[in-house]
Length: 144
Image (cartoon, rainbow, N blue to C red; front, side, top):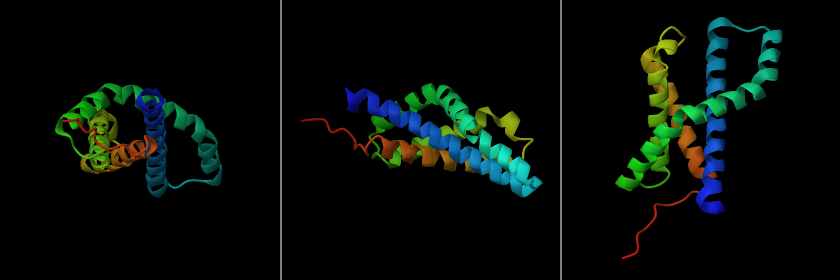
C-alpha cells in the first residue's frame, strides 16, 4: 500500500512544494531585478515565505490534479521512460498553468514566451523532483 498509494501522494505533495518554492524564488528574483528591494521588504518576504510556500503548493496541487492525471495516463499509454516522461509531464503542466493564467502574466515582468519558458522549466524540475521523491520508478513491464 505504501509504494502504490502513499508514496506517490507524498511525492506529489513534495513536487508541488518544490514547484512553489522555485516559482516563488524565480518571481521574487525577477521582481528584485526590476524594482529593487529594501532590507525591510526583503525580511518581510522571507518571513512570509513558509506560509506562501504552503498556500501556493496546495493551490498548485488542486489546480493541476486533473491535468496531471490525464498526462500521466497518456505517458503510461505511450510507455515513455520514467524520468524523461515525468519531466515532460511537468513541463507540459507548467505550460498549461501559464496558459490558464495568461491574463495575469501578460501585464507582468515577463513576455508571454518568457513566461511559458519559465513555467515549463519549473514544471520540468517539478516532474523530475516527483520522479526522485517517488523512488525513481521504472516503466512497469507486462509479463508475457
